[in-house]
Length: 566
Image (cartoon, rainbow, N blue to C red):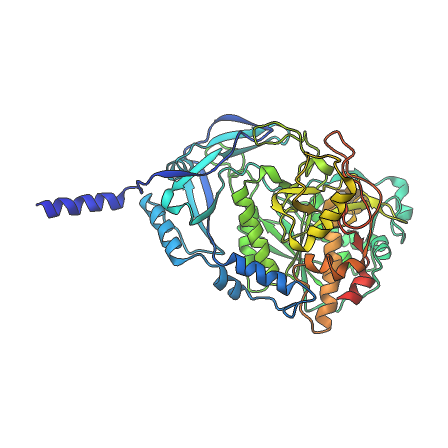
């Protein structure tokens, strides 16, 4: 009798949720600026949740990445395969089993681990029980977007060291588009649209002249990828019109499309996607161009009366790439957010995914942002740590040490810093060894200026720069001018794609993670920008100076010189 009772009790315990003490995994000090609570989230709202598991041997991966990215190292260019990265970093079997048992105790079935993540689908009410939290619907008045989020979440104490992050929970920012400024093309600009000098407007011809590009790619061995989310549409008809208007490239040239997690690339072209695909093609033809469109308009699916989508497309895109045996050698992304809006555990997880791409020989270039020292866009420069203090706002993923952040310039003869160019110093990541002497040299020049407004030990942003103002594009059949570091990233990425094509033609490995090369041997192939500044936060911001600076980084590309150096 007693044995039977114990058996029943054991069965009941196994069938009930894991009754361990929950420990807070992440908590925000306050609701992020700009967001207002509108009410409780609908209990039946569907959430696609990513549970990041602690990956192994990331310190070893980092050591190998730095070696294979250093031109002076014997392992330079010895990149890893997807399988090798996965084997090195996969979470421990015991961690996977423990997290799956926790989920099972809540009646949740998880599939296989992919790239260190378990992906589950559940309702808001189920998520609240699982994470010991409460989801609310929040509205951002300026963006006029809604999201279902929480300000903190918890996990069992025994899983605290086995889980790296769980989202969507405390990530209010959408890692969204760094929105460029758009203006119609003036009628009198047509006559100068194809000239070789970058005057009133920027076009492929002037970029090639300005950056000393006199090279015809071989094509066939490399590719360049463009990231797209948030309903952005890359129009092949707009590309065809652009090529006819601004290049000698056949108007039939086009890009391939890979749809991620149910993404769609149908409908009229949008500004960012058209900008990226038009300049990538114009600079790199006939290199293969790939446009990735990831589903999700954070926040969330309009079910149960909620107007937007809780899905987090940035992780979907990174996990998709991680699962492919072959990926482009060059990748450009114009999406990001103010660093402080990105929870640290999430930022670390995303940054590790970029490190893994670098180890596979991928050069990842990202826009630094368009708000000068005030962040991705102009902001009130308020810290969200609860203190309300004024500070310069760095951006993410530009602050991640494993990407190459691209700032903006304008003009020619000489170029100068574009005032919109976001730059500064990370509050999350210290200056890596490959960069620390450059950031220290700059800080020694400015002394105590802006002391207390930034982290002097932080990773410096950006790494390099390119033109950022008045790019001529075709969108919806009409010619427009676009400005922002959303122009700079695909421009510099195009230069890198040409370098990778050249190396491939010589039987060499792709450049991979660029920064150790750029901060050493590569600096000789860059145009140092020494004038201009990036105002914000009621200051003039940082000033461009000789050497690295937090406005234009190390400078803009000289393709001919870089080609000789690689």
